[in-house]
Image (cartoon, rainbow over all chains, first blue to last red; front, side, top):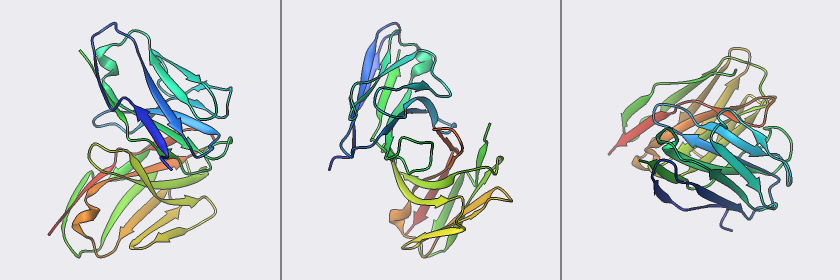
Length: 115
Length: 111
């Protein structure tokens, strides 16, 4: 099993450009998450999807949108990238559709630089 | 808001030593606490998950304890090896969907 996969691994954008980060999991998990990790800070939740067809905001949602395309896929879109969005983005999934009672399985990350 | 603190921020030990990493949290109403490992440039790997009703979990040379009343958890690594070098992250699960992460302890085990 591949687990959680993310594409692309690296991306450089210019301010104002848009892009979509892709995430897929093959573990039949109900919940999926997008986090960002910045130097000197812990991981922070951007958006999550407790189950297929639902999405909700996390701690730092401004400037992002998400789509839970199906049970496997959860994408993160930056409509107009800003330098403050330079970060490492992690997608994660967990088995249950409930609250944070399960372990979460993380993808390898996407390293995004916005110039 | 749950605040998670990890001490020390960095640690260097010679191979073979036993060591303890510390995690503290401000809100004791937790569902669980998890320890993750992160290698440079890589994603997170779950090491141990302790449910709120448990006191400790063990996996190989790793032992994690949880004291909810005092808001503390420790990760004990026995007989450390150079391959244990990584950043160790503590994450607390509360009533929401997100995990609340500490900033991590960067561990270097020297041969």
